[in-house]
Length: 461
Ligand code: FES
Ligand SMILES: [Fe+2]
Image (cartoon, rainbow, N blue to C red; front, side, top):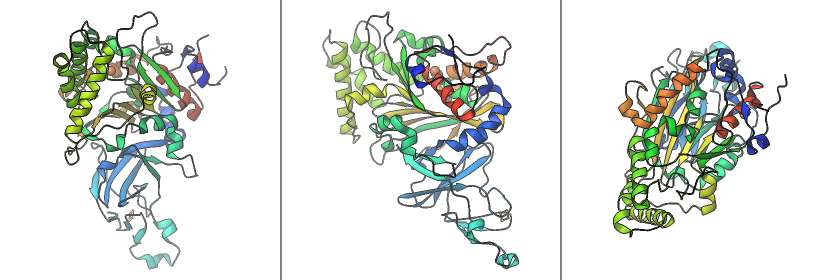
């Protein structure tokens, strides 16, 4: 059987494909990811706001590696492996029930024999160094550096030792389009994590397509239709709301801010926005946007068109934000169109963006277990300077602490583990992803196959 992969052209032509379950279920595949995938991509490790001061650091754990990311000057971030050069003790302990640790330090001393490193990872102290008779030097006694760069307020790391592509090259069009949203000026509103009982791909894929909305989040269909296109951008991909070929145009606006269904767009715009916001745990919109939407009925005459309602909503929300010191970026209309609703940045992060907010997701392997992952969701928002909330990663159990996740994410959690279990069935013959609405997922498997050398999606005919 041919191992050849499908092409970007196959995706653009929306050719139906299928792919197997090995990538989700196989312990061998998970083991190979540790060599073939993770150390060969730029990985989203965290956000700059976590290390504002010199000496601030956090740890980012991926597979068997832990990486220390530290601010060493006002404009320099360094990263190195969290492992002592002497006999390999983890330098900073990261408990299994944490989502990394944070701190501030000018140096790191290993608890085992006291070898000490400065902020740059250089060895500063070897106990009884004379015993080596001059055979060791900073080349072998310093911490091993990791490539690090930043984009949109995110810190990315790259474990490749040889010179590889830059972060900007890796992000490509996704970086180009999303840079207009000035996500670097947003701050965490909330952030939660859990160990979820499904593979990291099963988990992140649950947030890649709105195709599931009608069945999974059925309550939302009272307010809007959730038909979406999706489109590959090389490694990455985007989705956005769309009209069914058969449907009459009932909504306008695109992206996340749209009118909703109902006879009076002044009312339906507000109802859709409020329902989304309150049930997605106060993410994917802002108080400003919801308040402005609530006034549409008072501020606009009956019979105002959908287009005029949308324009007025955005204009008044922008003015409300400006009055409290929150400046919206000017995003060209063609970029807004291209940006759609939400992006998947390969391999394991999603960004659902608005002009003043982001709803983000990240999923990583948990240990060597293909049946578990570290799952995170967070909201970013644009705040007046000095009013940014102080947040930490909060652990919230996906099954027993549903109130912390809100209705919509809980509904997603109610699927993911059963998708993962269902894929193990002898009766499951491989996925049949929707070529129009679930192209982001197909693209993820096309790209995974390039890295892994197996698991390529196959054309259905
Ligand atoms: S292992 Fe770190 S000082 Fe010995
Ligand atoms: Fe969902």
